[in-house]
Length: 155
Image (cartoon, rainbow, N blue to C red; front, side, top):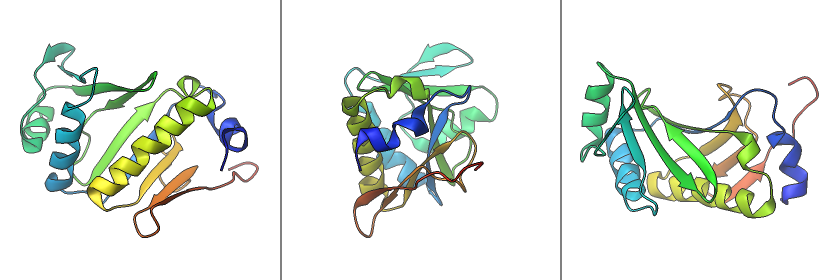
């Protein structure tokens, strides 16, 4: 799969793209949070817009989410990815597709997807915003490959 093949799936249509890891547990979240904490530059965690320390324990992020709006933002290359901690059983990271504008950014994005899959041992999907059932890219932990799912007209 090459950037030129998938580039149309990143054309801006007014919506973001989402990265999902489904059927997650607090243990999966903990492993991913621990990895994100090591990124340079470090992620920024906000509660109701105020910068705070990233919670040490994944469960704390979800307990806080019950009473405050949580947002964890970090860079993958030049692209900003965001996590809102919507649900324990589903990781979701959103991104502006305009920030994936060349092969270098695309390679960084699929590298992040592979890393999520390797850390959790679960499938990772890149989809149009809020369309888990309509993946653009899919990482399989069984094959350790990312596969492009060509778009059907009108889908």
